Length: 154
Length: 154
Length: 93
Length: 93
Image (cartoon, rainbow over the protein chains, first blue to last red):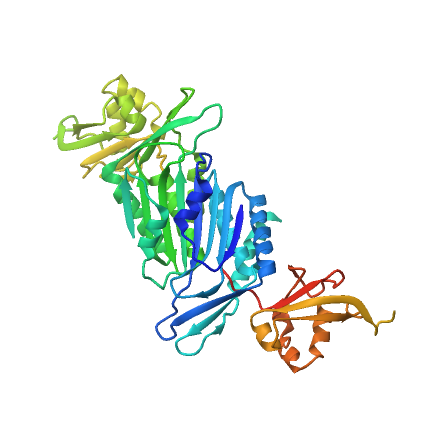
């Protein structure tokens, strides 16, 4: 179980190898990678800056990871989130979950992303080619995605 | 969209890079990796041989991939399945899905694995340290996992 | 022609995993009797060909079949079949 | 002491994203009036401190808060708070 907040890029293959190296009890690994999209033709995104709340981010991601470990039998997990200036095509976030069985790995990774999207203190500021950039609005659908995890538990 | 049936290993990072290289329209990439488990302490798995139906495997996986592309807005996908002799800790299967949004990528990857588990013509034969190995029985739970995709559509 | 005559349909039959081990063969080419309409009929006929077939198809309900490399049910017609495969439930992934 | 007196509670207040831009500061240290019980009270008090605060908290319902680096609701008590943060709904991931 590990959380890293960093400016530099990550490499999925290396992170997965590191996480399960030498283990023979893991049957399923799911990774999620979030990437900066370039926008559409009329309003291309030039770059994006991710601001975060350094004191809180690490603790909040660790809480979310602990919650996932509490709900699913995970043998290993990893969250990496970048901050600073990013370009279209750049990696933003990596979530990795390892478990004996595939459904636990899939569900835990999906849960981690839904929680991260609504709880991790990061804010995106886009620069767009037509000057329409600025702080990205939160998506109502991200809040709604959380609801399904509540009904599973309560 | 690609399917590969091969004896040799694969490297997740290289496959993901290849799949989305130079693209700025992909926002989410999900990978699933299936790995040979070593069994428990009393009946360790020494090795495993994956037999398949060469003529049918490629076509069947392509049908499954086409079905996923039909249901979710995928920008890219990849299925790699190994055959032959494998050891505990070895990679068996890789599924990669790329989409604009994370839920499509997660659901399509999960769907591909559920279908692959019940439709792709592969059979596992385990060798165990206590001589109890042999052909692996299909899991009833894998058949049940399919049902949720039917209710979504019908 | 009558039901007891041989048809002109020659098919390649493949066996995988424990179906291969139990029948003792990975493939064979057979001429189908014209009386056989579907996969279930073919299984019934194969079981008359020897104890190894009888053992392999003993629990016919767990045996899966494919015609021309596509999964089929026991009531699938044999007409047009060039390659038929029998195998246990799959266990890949 | 009476409600109008200053308490001994000094807190660091942090502002992120457009809350930082609207208030014109990323952080400040303030002594909380003892009359303030919860986050909603603090927001009401901050809005009296100048037009930049009024603008920042104009739509208070969209502003999120954390006390000591943990998410809280507007009715969360200020007692024990050393660090309070205000920010828009998060947009990471």
